[in-house]
Length: 123
Image (cartoon, rainbow, N blue to C red; front, top):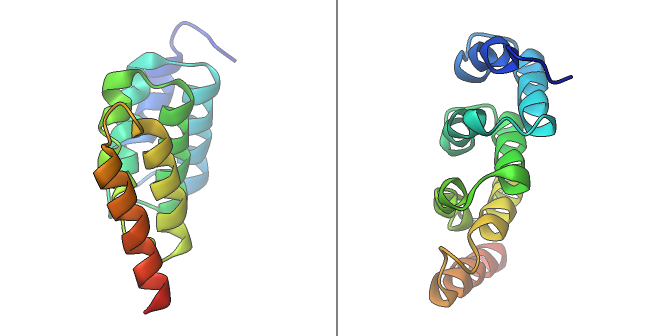
């Protein structure tokens, strides 16, 4: 699947929200499977964008977890601190924790986030 102009071909699908969700999901999968490091910033923008399609956010965060460098993974910290109040946040939170613990996420932040999630479920 990897070819010389792959990044130029898929990048518009990663950055243009007017493209179909299915096409954008395929672009994310191609970027991840072909381990195109230059797409990490686009995947990060998708993962962190609260206005983005939840499924695309999860695929992008999972992709960063799979092949992202340490610097990019550290930027997923806001996902690790999300409230766990719906299934979309649950997946994003898990990927954020896996990407940032222990390098960028302190024990206090981790346990605070997990305890906060449990309090939300009890209330």
